[in-house]
Length: 111
Image (cartoon, rainbow, N blue to C red; front, side, top):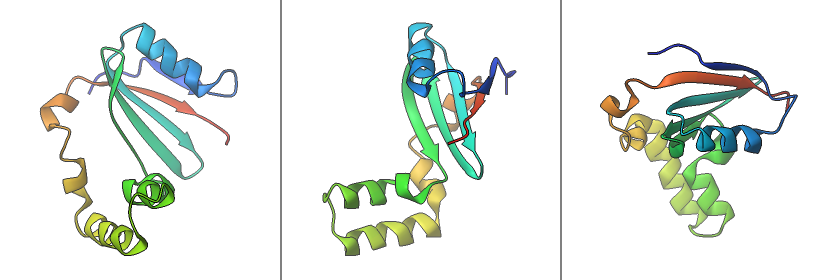
């Protein structure tokens, strides 16, 4: 893994501004945003977001689709069971070799 190129608090500016900066400067890497026990990861390649993940249940695909009324509660429960049984398969869309060479960027936010 590379070195941390950017680290600090988001108290001084907004997350969308940071995302716009990373896009404008065509950065490749991983942005980690933490607040208390919440974490989110956003992967960039040449400034474009290529993958995102987090540890918040409300941000998981099943939860989002249920809120948007794209799936039913029973379908969301099936998704949850599948996710909890082997969530590594849900992240298989990002090849491991694509993760190599990403430098880590981190920021904290007091949400």
